[in-house]
Length: 436
Image (cartoon, rainbow, N blue to C red; front, side, top):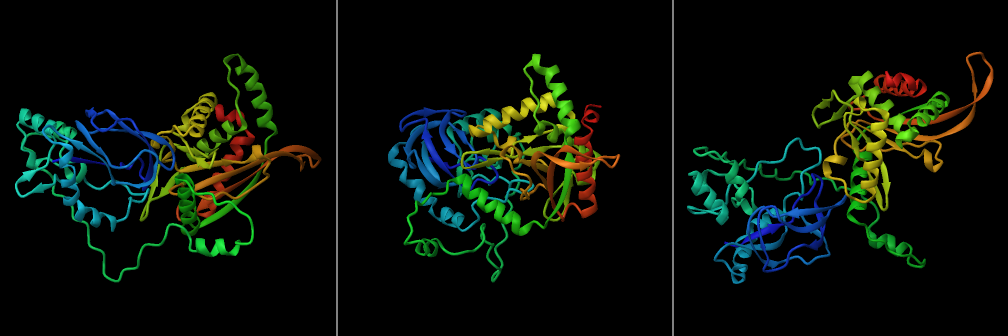
């Protein structure tokens, strides 16, 4: 039976993607691990590998096609003895499941704790669908294929399934999804209701304009941040931070590190200060997880990086343990690959805390929107000369940076948020202590 190759979900939040380029053509023989195509998600362009062996019988989705939904058949793989004339057969058989799948949500929410169990191998009476290679390996191992859980399209058993199966082990029963309750309210739309596209276009019908189509990244940003602003109870804490000591300390360090080709930025110190603050106020190092919070022992700090058409928030893991020079080097690498859209999903997912720095753009202060499931984000403004009153009561000029901490009130209360921001301020105003 020909096997449908389905549009993969290359990240937890992916619902659709662009089939940018085919790396194979009809008639090509492929094996497990061979590259099949390049797929653009909302965040990056990623390579898609074959999970089984066979011949590409038919390509169903042309290169360059946008908006291809996850689990849509994009090509058909033929096994030994099958031909392109057999391709139409599985499409009719799969029509009913496909229609049923369309009624389900396109993807699980990003906050899901675990992916659903793989479906049991699809069977027609006593027949179990498996690839020829999987059948050969099963025969060699003495496996009963009816006891193996299939992870391929429509539950088909593939090579990886039989390689990890243990002879004599029974397959776990497939959990049945609960039917929707009659009369239950429909899920809320991902973006806030507003004037329709047609209404807005009519409103500006007498003015010249150009329509700009939203790409996947822009759609995702719009949906996630609209949801975040509506569903996360934000509150805001503001402090001014004196950078004089940090600027002098940074200048000395950069002179010392010049021979190694290292140049520390103010942002590197901010990352380190926030990572240490999450250790100093551990109750704030947590995220919201639906009906509970998750508290962490390590400081994984996300940093917003602007790219053309959107932004990434790559995550520096275990940031409290790393030196300033290590953080600087890692941040430069992540930022470069973010702008090239070459980050892997695990490099921009996770973390409990984020930093958004617009100081280099001359912004004095602003309020940032929390990116769930993070519990807080620090909005950083520019360091500018301001009049300050010294400890001796005399008015002097100092370099002052304004910061705003946006906080999720479900995770962090006011006093706890104040303690966290105070720890960040103290670390930045006493930078030498961050090296202790």
